Length: 475
Image (cartoon, rainbow, N blue to C red; front, side, top):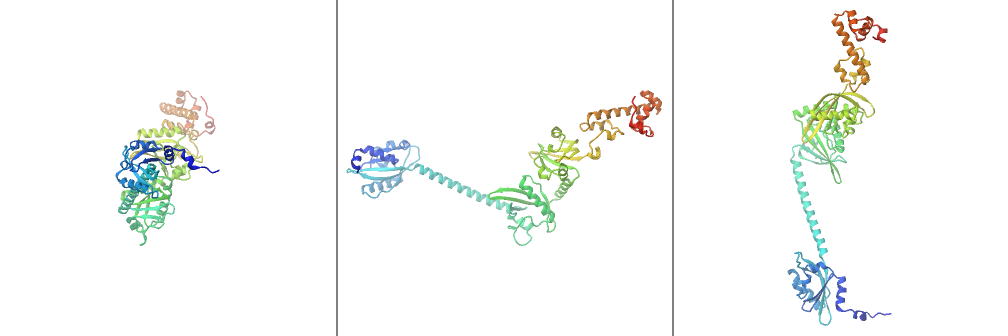
């Protein structure tokens, strides 16, 4: 069944038609043939708030900015001449100071030459364009800032008097080298860039630098390596830093010539590394920063890197209290001497040790140095300290107090009794001028008991009496 579209539309008045048109288009203007605005229909209230409420009764060209006037005339002329529809952007001044861009097309309707201007609000597009322009400007600024930084970096690298290399961390290929590095390490006329590092060093130095590069991958604090060149045997300190940078990572390596005092310091560091006593450096909280090979061996860890970053009381001290007491005294007095404790190996080895420590400041940070000496041989070969092992030679009171914490109290009390007993016998013999009968009477002992005790303590040069020595007489 055919539908009479004309009859249907005939029932829709002009105002309803304009409202329906505005639902599809952001703004609709009803103009008379002279271009004066008769009605404004808008589906965005914000456009009316920007001045649209006052357009009615004004000429259309009075509502646009100066640069849009020729476009208004062109739109009206094309509509009057029934030319093909062309969309043109006009800018309306706003009470808020920001022009409102609207794209218009104009058509003529009716026998009276009424014009209808249909507009699309371009503010969202303008905002996107503005953000795009700002983003482009920001990228441009960042680009020039990066160019300036690269230029400054290259100038600083080339002007540096110290040989400096930039090395790819994955392939160990030299990426950049300054003039000083080329003079120092180039083995031929060929430049260093593209060659594999380390190069130009003797065998021992090559191993040291390779180990240093490995440490730099896992630690931000890496000691300088002492190296020697193949050409002339000149000596340098090599410092290495690991830098993450997309799409990979880089090493920055610097060669610093040794001065006379640097050479002595390097030798001292090497002596500490191979010293028979343990040496450990920690931060203020007791986390291991560096350790020599003796500590690695005694603590039974696989390598120095395994110990670094862990608290020293994992190995040092009978309990955590021991280490806390040591660190507290170190912070309070600056140094601790001859602190006796134990060192526990990772695999269960236990060693009696003597610790001396000192704390120093470096800038805002503080570091502690611990010298740890194994004193197990002093206390007995392969055994913990025991009173019974030295029963024939009682200790002095000072020696006895040093055993507190390492020997059970029962044994300490027994040895204290032996010391007092020996001192009393010596005093009695001295008072009686070595008259043993008088000394026995003074002490309230029989002569036989006195002789047994004298043999026990090695007094008076008496011949040993094995039976009595094994079973001392009581009194």
